[in-house]
Image (tube, rainbow, N blue to C red; front, side, top):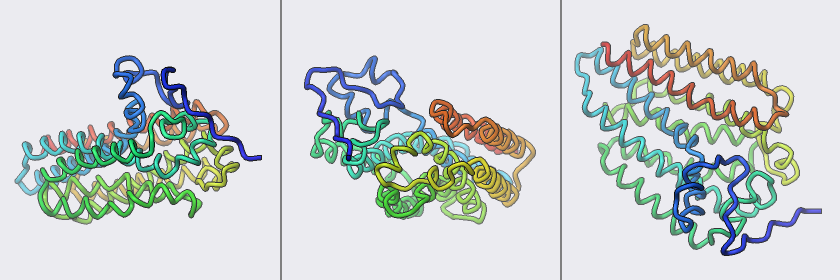
Length: 323
């Protein structure tokens, strides 16, 4: 028997937070009328914005390192890009989540972790979600127009991936691969915006980042694998099942190798390599600690990838500044 979708929340009752959401500033400080829209954009879970932003920052730092090696580092432009990419990541991650929830509103109502999201719980109407999506898209467009023409073209090339990703769980067993290709697009953007070119190092960084995303999102997906099996959507967590740790060794190991090749192509110095080493140790620790039957641990390990990514960024940026 198919579980019934939950009834919409009463108009004056407190809006429930999703099961994997923290009781943070959205619940404590945001005006009540805005809370459902902020949850729709996942403002109550900023981890996604961080994970979208980090490949952008990696790319800026590595491109700056290459400029420094050539004797032409543009520190001011790089600093401006770090800020613009931060704003853009928040706007576009929110837009992506809104688009995902519009497409998945019926499925989300059948999954324990997502049934209290704004659309399936009735806190936001479909028309309101579409309008909010347009508003976030406009914010992203403003950031985009601050970039050089070449970078604008590179950014627009990702829209196909953004559009189809939410549908992939209905089509392929590793939708996380499409997520990786989408979420890692920023690994190209730093080079495109700072140098208006895409050297080999950019594509190696992109490939490594994509495999990193597949790995950490597989960990995240283990929270939903029972519900996914019942609903009939596909997931790498279901495909890998008890072999997830072995797959993570391969995915994370390949990610580190590819990012290392990007560093070599960029003639990175010892500080950058130290950052990659810390990143690799962090990923190995995730694999060692993983218990796919412990949902809380899976969520903590997934979130810890923000710290892993920032450690690598710190190494790349310090290396660029020390040239």
